[in-house]
Image (cartoon, rainbow, N blue to C red; front, side):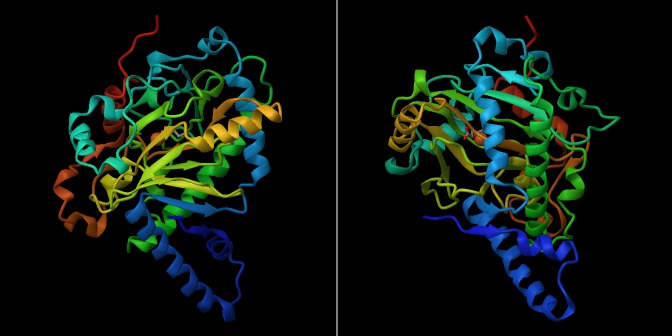
Length: 362
Ligand SMILES: O=C(O)CCC(=O)C(=O)O
Ligand SMILES: [Fe+2]
């Protein structure tokens, strides 16, 4: 199944006031249809492909090039950027730390056993062998109960372009998410800023993963075990190596192909909360497939890096804001499963389950 690609340009043109009166009725109708497609696709598939003219393939490449050279550095060098006392929410998370939810969540394991064999995820056998770098993007709150989730950034030595490259790509990805969040709110019949107003000063994280294909690039190797994302919406640029599988709401497993110049959005648990379960967090995994091996062979021939870097950004609801079903979602049949909780408390609970919280620095 191919996911639809939503071009964000008409919406962007409209909000920048670029359309004239005679075309605007037509345009408004077109945009309303697009907003409904956004909200429906997020609900049915947990994912969405978008094209944002502000995020170019060149920007994505500059970011990937820098992250490849970072992940290629030695183990000891990378450990200098590790901050376990800040729940790894800034700096590097080494391989073998983050635990996939499906490894520790019995209810999830039971659901997996009930899936038809062909749609079952690959069973992870331990923590993920992927590294990750967390970089906070956007303004931080001056006053928050959740200081660790909103900490100062960590910059590795020897990368003078680090801050500019991370901020520039991160801000572009957030800008794209904000448009999708507005369009989704309109599609769900909520005020257009229903989600974005809660995202202001959220602990948004540019969080690329780095997986060493030289070492682990054999078919069936799980880089990120079956899980959902705990944040609001996740956005990924293109990775140079495929491997991401997602599960649609109907249980079907789909291998994601992100067309050049497109971005992939996935629904996270905070969105599920705000919609009272109307829009479930999308389940996914990253596994080495024959297509990954094909891309590795090509990279070898072209003398390119064999680190698989993802251009992942986790957008969040502000830590001190309250998660609860919004507007008419209070009436949804599952709303009772989503009691009011401070987003920061919710995030800290989830981080503890996947092994990112509660560790002291050695
Ligand atoms: O590595 C990827 O492509 C995505 C990994 C992932 O699902 C995550 O970081 O939550
Ligand atoms: Fe994920």
